[in-house]
Image: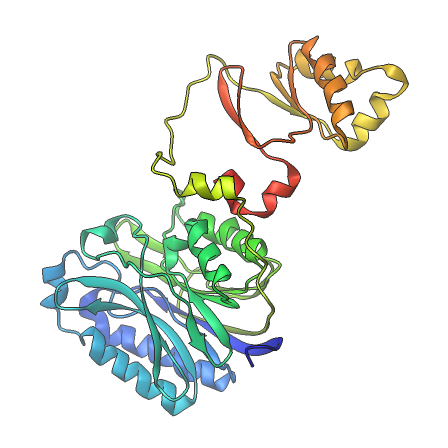
Length: 378
C-alpha cells in the first residue's frame, strides 16, 4: 500500500471533558466512539489528547493517587477493543514512566498491536507543570503508510509538521484539547480551529485528523469541540459541533506530501543560536497601510502617469506604507520613486526576503513564492 495512492475511511471521536475522578464515565465515552467508528466502517479512529483519564491533572502526585487505570492498563484495554473491532486507533493518554509523566499518544493496529508511541514535545502552558516534554520526532509505520502524530499545540510549530512530512508522513493524526479562547459566553474560538490546521494541511499537502474534547473540565478551562477531518486542500471533509460527545467519519485520499523547501540560508538561521524572537519596536505613530489591487495599478499607471493617482488618495487617508503588486522589477522601481514624492514607502516587488524599517516600524517583506513554505516567514 505504501507506494500507491490510498483511500481510507477514517473517523475522529469527540469526548466530553471530565475530571480524573470521573474516569469511568470518560471510559464509556471512549468506548462509544470505538463501537460507533466500527459501525461506520472506519478503518482508523483518532481520539483526543489525554483522552484518559484527563488533561488537567493538577500535579504528578494527584495523578498517581487517583482512582483510575494507569496508562499501561488503559493501553491494554484499548488494544483489546482495537482487535475486537478490527480498528486502527490513535489515542491520547497519560503515560507514567515511573520517573515522569508524559502527555502521550499511542498508535494501535487492527490486531491490537502497538505500532508506536509519541510523547508531546511542545508543551503549551499549564501542562508543563506535570508533564515532561518528549525528545523524539518520528513517524509511525502503519498499514496505510507512514503516519505523523502531532499533539495539540505542536501544530503551532511548523518545524514539527515539516519534519514529519520530510520523513515521509502521508497523513497526520492530531489528538488535541483545543482551549476555548472566546470571551463571550456561548461562543467558541481557537486559532487552530479557525485557520491553522487548514493552513498546515495546504502547506504540506497532508490530510489532518483532529480529535478534540468539548465542555468544561474545570471552572475557567473549557474546550471548543469541533473535531474535524481536514483534506489536503484545507477543506473540512467532516466536522463535529462545539459541544457534547461526537463521532464523524469520511473517506480521505492519502496523496504524497509536498516537498518541504528550506533554502540553506533559512536553515542556518532557523538552527542558529541567535534568539528566534526579537522584542517588537514601538512605532512613533500608527502605521496605516494602503493596499492597491493589481488591476488598478495597470489602469492608473498608463500613459506615463507614474502612479500619482494611486498614491495621493492613499496619503490623504494617512497611509505611510503602500502594498503595490507589479509583475517586474523595472515597474516596481518607477512606482517606488513616485510613492516617495508623496511621502509614502511602497513595497512593490520584494525580490529579497527581509525586514525593513518603515515609519519607525519593522515590516517583514516576503515574495509570493516564499509563502509556499513556513521557513521564510519563520
